[in-house]
Image (cartoon, rainbow, N blue to C red):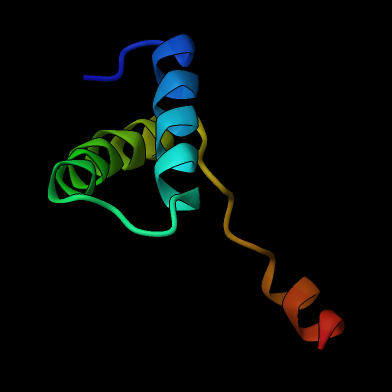
Length: 61
């Protein structure tokens, strides 16, 4: 469970290391799957990305 920013940073470091591996063992693949869900949940609460303004989207294109 990710409760603090430190927990979150540690989980991201582990995820990054696993993603950089050329291939994953079954255990590493399971570990990645297990970490992604709580990281996403933590981000949904603490690192929300605001929806863009529709006018800005129109002007950007």
